[in-house]
Image 1 (cartoon, rainbow, N blue to C red):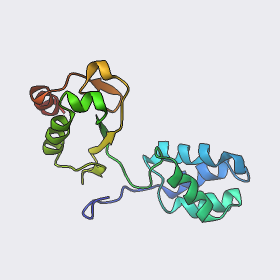
Image 2 (tube, rainbow, N blue to C red; image 1 turned 120 degrees about the horizontal axis):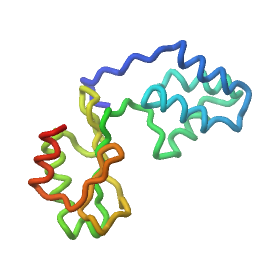
Image 3 (cartoon, one colour; image 1 turned 180 degrees about the vertical axis):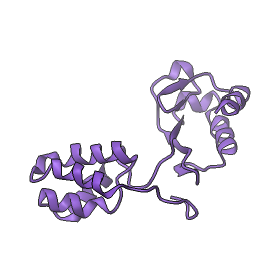
Image 4 (cartoon, rainbow, N blue to C red; image 1 turned 90 degrees about the vertical axis):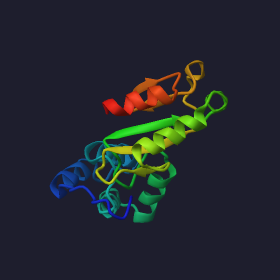
Length: 158
């Protein structure tokens, strides 16, 4: 998280309700953290001791599972997740330029979130849609055959 970025408000009652629903079910750690992330957009640090207590685990065990899975986040993320492919097919068809231009338009580096929590920029080893390379995804929308003009138009709309 950027230093200037304000952490979003977390409703402690909602957090406690979610954790309580999974109480004493060690097997439920992953579904529990997924539900917390779905509710708040990330797993707030203050939830880790609550989760550990409810599931009779050590906080380090909870943190270990969270940090193991790449799709679990412990910092606030943007409303719009921009993923730019850096796979081989995208790279040879201009993916490096696509990434550079997206960084310029968003004012972000890789794995950064904007201060207003509007965007998070990520790169992905491969999106698996090589026929459309170079590609990127914003939230769940795929954009293929990207070029400077398409990027400009895309972020003009956003």
